[in-house]
Image (cartoon, rainbow, N blue to C red):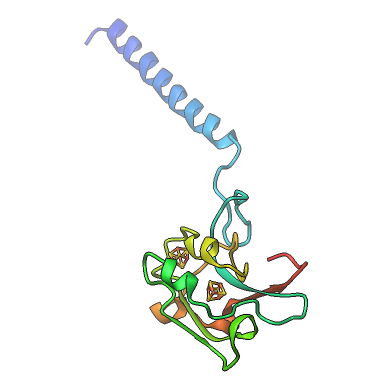
Length: 151
Ligand code: SF4
Ligand code: SF4
């Protein structure tokens, strides 16, 4: 190898190192796109469909009358159990309501089917657990805010 070739090689190598460092520097100075979840919450679109909640009316009572319309509308059997009290018609109230988040498609058909506006899919996306049983929600866990409060 001649001296000229050696010199060209050294210059080219140095240039490629500088080029690589420029790429690293450019990316290091870019705004971060990752978030420190769960301490930093990701903005969720208004139309996001997340965790199901049950709503209460102005009187503080559950709106759900255990009419089963949501259960029938659900395409994935994510609402396996609904049981009401002994009352009749609109006075009846759900006593048992089970939502299985592990089966839910978050399609919103149950909310659309409900004639009493008793349920809503919130924007809560952090539905996690260490066991499948953690994703089974009973009425206590499903209780959302009273009318006027935000979910
Ligand atoms: S959102 Fe869809 S899949 Fe989930 S419970 Fe409602 S109807 Fe069923
Ligand atoms: S949530 Fe609505 S549709 Fe489902 S059982 Fe209750 S009242 Fe009926």
